[in-house]
Length: 111
Image (cartoon, rainbow, N blue to C red; front, side, top):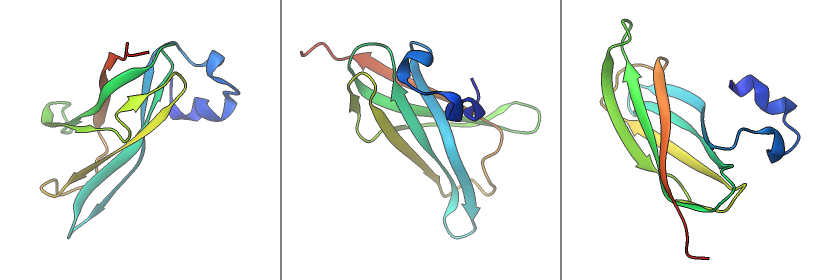
């Protein structure tokens, strides 16, 4: 499901039953390096915890160049909750364009 599908979604029942991760914006500044930020939506039907956004950046031949992860804010979400993440890569010397995002998480059974 592409980001272009989000304006058509009226409620969480129309989203797939999974943890959804989307990159929202990317930019590059020579002094700060490359940056990518986005959101994670919990739609698995249960609270989740220990959420980490995983980023893999590819070169022009789709060979992985870099793999990193960051904790989301917050790192615990109820059903329907939305978290944010932000990657700041000072060593990456161009805008992040060719990448793959994945969310790692665990079920929160403390209720």
